[in-house]
Image (cartoon, rainbow, N blue to C red; front, top):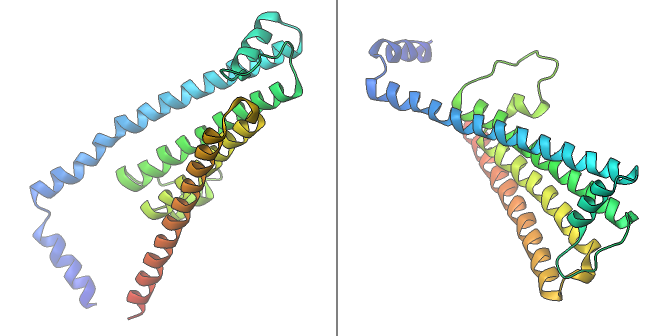
Length: 205
């Protein structure tokens, strides 16, 4: 009862104009998220171009085959003369990479808008993402770090498939970068866990 009275008194005092203005500036982020939507469209277009060329190369289209072979050939490596299993695998991994980056964009666009701009009020919607119901800045950071690890794993796998085209320093450097992403994600998740536990203990007291 006392807390309710305090809330009513706070509302009665009103919100200062400067606070209204500063809170309203969150909408400045909207063009950024709309820009990411355009970036998503670019990735969709790129995905279909690569997929169309892959199908065309399999069907015997010479132009599509040349494009695919140029795409999978690493600088300094021997260019394959035909569409091999390795070439197909590299193209498919590239498509998976595009999909994972697209998923990352979706998380940033929807999660960021929900967290920093305005509520979407999707409760009860059958297509509401499971993670959106409890998303906050900390959860979003952990999910983004996990998605980046997945993307890094795809790039590292592509490098190992073409390991003969890289020197040892490059292989070690890419592996080290991937491990750095992994440890960073673990550190973020651990920090989030500590913050959550601290918050729960404070609520108990």
